[in-house]
Amino acid sequence: MRNVVDAPEEAIRRLLSYLRQLDCMLQEGKRSFSSQDMAEALHLNPAQIRKDLSYFGEFGTRGVGYDTERLADELRSILNLNRNWEFVLVGVGNIGVALLRNPELRKQGFEIVMAFDKDPQVIGQVVGEVRVENVSRMRRRVEQMGTRLAIIAVSLESAQEVGDSLVEAGVEGILCFAPCYLRVPNTVRLIPIDIAMELGRLVYRL
Amino acid sequence: MRNVVDAPEEAIRRLLSYLRQLDCMLQEGKRSFSSQDMAEALHLNPAQIRKDLSYFGEFGTRGVGYDTERLADELRSILNLNRNWEFVLVGVGNIGVALLRNPELRKQGFEIVMAFDKDPQVIGQVVGEVRVENVSRMRRRVEQMGTRLAIIAVSLESAQEVGDSLVEAGVEGILCFAPCYLRVPNTVRLIPIDIAMELGRLVYRL
DNA sequence: AATATGTTGTGAAAGTGAGCACAAGCACAA
DNA sequence: TTGTGCTTGTGCTCACTTTCACAACATATT
Image (cartoon, rainbow over all chains, first blue to last red):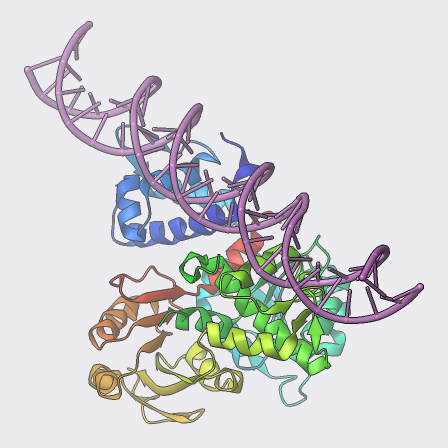
């Protein structure tokens, strides 16, 4: 084992949830735990937790368990979360505003450093801690700042166009809230969040 | 084949994306298509699309392909999306407001019929088309209205408590934006959306 | 009617991920 | 030092998903 590239995407998802749970444990003052404890908290199989971790190393002590703080540090290091990440936001509508005003993201190291919109009513306004700029300047500004990550929160109609501009500007990862499949080169990582689709999943078999 | 219960959860996710794509095709006036066409549009294997559909029936014509409108109808029927679904929203903060003001959801048949918050500043205000009520009345109102679905958009601290109340009130499905693992009986369907976690996935390997 | 071309539906193969079960290792007591 | 109890790390097996490959069917052409 210990082959990082073998770790399936689902394992990464779970590692993130382990980290989230570790922060809860720390807040409760729980300084160590077994895979059994974590499994009960997250409704998982303890072996799965151990296997997920084993892709990246040995972080526990046999007969004892895991040190909460140590594992949190290790996970942050594995997941590249022990630093700040800068994002550009495109589309300052309802969702965009919600993201700009959410202090939780910044706390976790995700900082929106620029925001763009096409609506003259919105351009120039300060939301959260950034001033909304005209989307026509987006490409140049993103190139200039060297921002590698973007969040698309525009309408279905504009999404592909905005995505193309971002890719041209050198963005390497996109989180997209628009309800469509964004075509991007496969050098660019794309994660879609479609709330209507999640509601659809919820409704299935009910 | 034709065994509905065998359809994996991932297939349901994909069916939803097929439906979304079909709506795009209809808008473009594309009245029929092959699994190959759809596969190219969504970056999938055509056999996977055919197999996903085959869990539920035969919807195409050999040698010809699929009728766009017919398949859209069939999928809406399979996915229970040919009717309106009523939701209760708890937490009218940034995300809650974004959901209430999003007309797209209603168009797709997802209607927020009640909204609750604990903040006196927010209670009584009309957002979108509903008046925000005091969360203390939530349980009674949900029981009364018989609402089966809920969206939790409250803080981490309140999420579990709110979830428990909703379950007691008879809710059967919950979409949760709070960054924690909600404990619910396994008769209740839970779908979590954690934006920070998705950003974390985006950042991994970058 | 026969042939060529195209596309579906699906059994079977290949590939992938999860869970079991146990050796390895730690802690503490006798 | 030896023994007991506990928990990790992991090879192996089983189950599930995806993909392949082809028969079945449709349409068009000669």
